[in-house]
Length: 446
Image 1 (cartoon, rainbow, N blue to C red):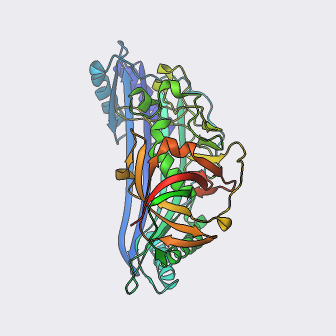
Image 2 (image 1 turned 180 degrees about the horizontal axis):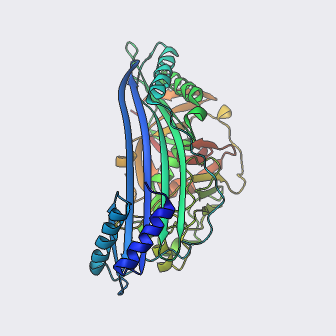
Image 3 (image 1 turned 90 degrees about the horizontal axis):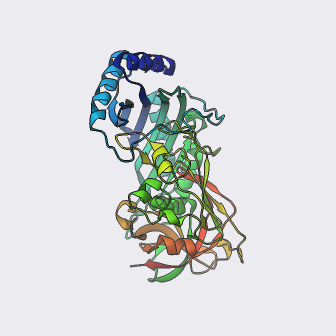
């Protein structure tokens, strides 16, 4: 891909020649290599380079045309601008998209290094060793059916006819290991772990191995649980997954489309216990994939969503911010239609709880480690969920794996039933969070 200066100059010259006065261009290029193994042998190796460029052109009637391309050399850019110019004649006339008012504002001073990619042979070698060590951790672990080691380089840019020119690059490597056990007369059990870092050399492979082995072994001795109401503790990964499944609560586009549990009037209302605070923080120090601007060129930032239980902000694009008399928050994704999505959640305690709780002292409490079937078990517009989970029943501080069970409820009731937010946060792929204690959740056992 040509550098951003060349693209900007070419776009400006081509637009002038075509009589285009207003346009913008967003693009990204991803260079990725990944490997999977099976019983000590390579199972799948992939290498790909994917580029995507979106071009928007406004005509004199202020309607906009959108096109996409993978080619940003002068000829490709000219074709895209011409096509978008022609498409603008058929553009919508209501709520026409516009440049972000912050597209030329300074971005955060965030530096991200780009690490050199290791050869595929190195990925395979490290993954085969990891699989072997994990299977040796316990006789019951017979396979690691789901595994992967990948590395990715990402380049992004945004420019427009008002003089905005932004670009950034970063890289990261990730590893996941998911086991399966086999024991005579026992059901197969599984557990997994995930790690991500800026480069392969910084990836905590040993930590991933240890976590996957410990979780798997802890699930070998399992018992059925009775159906009923339980005090439930969500792991950081589980609570982030659950909140992410109901992200329409904070999505301004979903609210305007009436596809959300919130309305414009929901701002300032209490939606959770005062013990809970939630931010979307694209530039959090632990966010390996941090981005300093969104698809419209708006700088990213820390956005408080729930402050001491009160809904304090929505996530905006330039268009939704204009319609709701707010400021864009840096969460827009460029495409045929501008969409909105979160970057990196950060959960932390709000007001002090009446009582502190510890797993070491807990009795008849369920610790949910991982939620499954989020695509099928969540009714995001009703607020309800019924989800299988992996976890443990804690009795007098001792953990016993739950054989098979589902947890069900309403996200609004869950948020208001929080009785304790622990202080120590843990990093997951989608954010950082502590364990969160919730009273009176329905759990169905076998």
